[in-house]
Image 1 (spheres, helix red, strand yellow):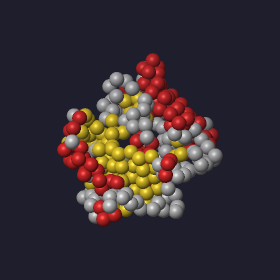
Image 2 (image 1 turned 90 degrees about the vertical axis):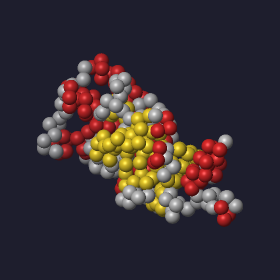
Image 3 (image 1 turned 135 degrees about the horizontal axis):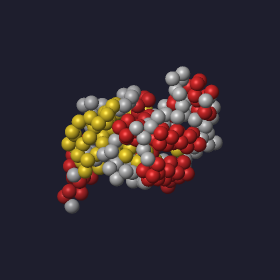
Image 4 (image 1 turned 120 degrees about the vertical axis):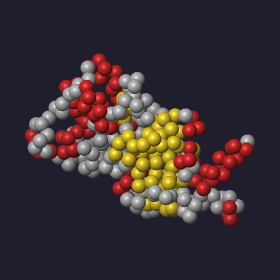
Amino acid sequence: MAGLEELKKKLQPLLFDDPDRGGVSTRVPLPEDTCNSYVVSDGGTVNLLSRSLGEYNINEHGFHKRSSGPDELDSDEKAYRCASHEMHIFGPIGNGASSVVERAIFIPVHRILALKKINIFEKEKRQQILNEMRTLCEPCCYPGLVEFQGAFYMPDSGEISIALEYMDGGSLADVIRVKKSIPEPVLSHMLQKVLLGLRYLHEVRHLVHRDIKPANLLVNLKGEAKITDFGVSAGLDNTMAMCATFVGTVTYMSPERIRNENYSYAADIWSLGLTILECATGKFPYDVNEGPANLMLQ
């Protein structure tokens, strides 16, 4: 019981409880527009706000998510304990355009994780954080998607670390860089869970990933591939199942995306098809030297 009480005290700041108001939870109103904003409390808790994605309250001990429906009965709350002091970091795995990924051991369960670190002070990066956590913390563990373990905030660096399943085989881009091509039976086995993951994103979550490519399909030593990097994913619930935003990696974009037309779930299937061809043959199926215009002609 003592351990439980200690955990409650540590997670208390995540709920924004105000002891001066009798312990009643008080929350910052969501902004009127759909863009996310953030507030950092004196105690070192970050409150990420979005009318479409809800509230994400993150500090050194973990994070608490609250999604609001049309009324209070539709509200959904989740809390994840993943404290910064419980991580032993080994060093970087890789660097992306907006984040650094490090390998760490989560000491309480002796499990190796990947920590994706993103700075909160740039609006675009904050949106990527929200997209990542929105996508992964709902199922928490679903075939074909990297597992979400939690997140925490470090006030000194201004970084939020998202703790993810460590995929010890690298990415499919790493595999074809070394092996040149992947035999069809092996590739078929690898991609079974990827298809399950895409089906879940499209049919259950109504999300378009928008950046399916070999570098965003991670592999473990069991030969399973899983989808990662949901920073540019988009929901289609309120857009008549079409998107119009130009984000992602242009060489894997579907024709309608390259032409800057509206697109939907099929755009992910096109990108996966190009990925499969590249893995099977060891080379990208198009000549991309002349850029997107040449891609459209082919």
